[in-house]
Image (cartoon, rainbow, N blue to C red; front, side):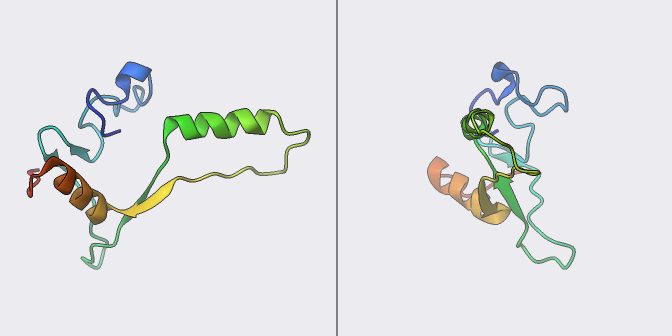
Length: 100
């Protein structure tokens, strides 16, 4: 989601309008964001779960090879607090502010 150009060039996220760079939570290039980091009690503990498209593809490929499917297959990616994700981007970019 946060890579240059976004995921649109891969055809991912186009239907809901989230395929372009900066369409989802933050634009790392321009350091602009609309970050849902605070819960209803104004505590910055909101988390998101991020899964790489390649990891989803690997999961599906392995599931197709199962001799028998269970009633439910589940997967999830890395869970991270939104405020920690913002801090990571700030550290990697060497910039301390997001503007929204």
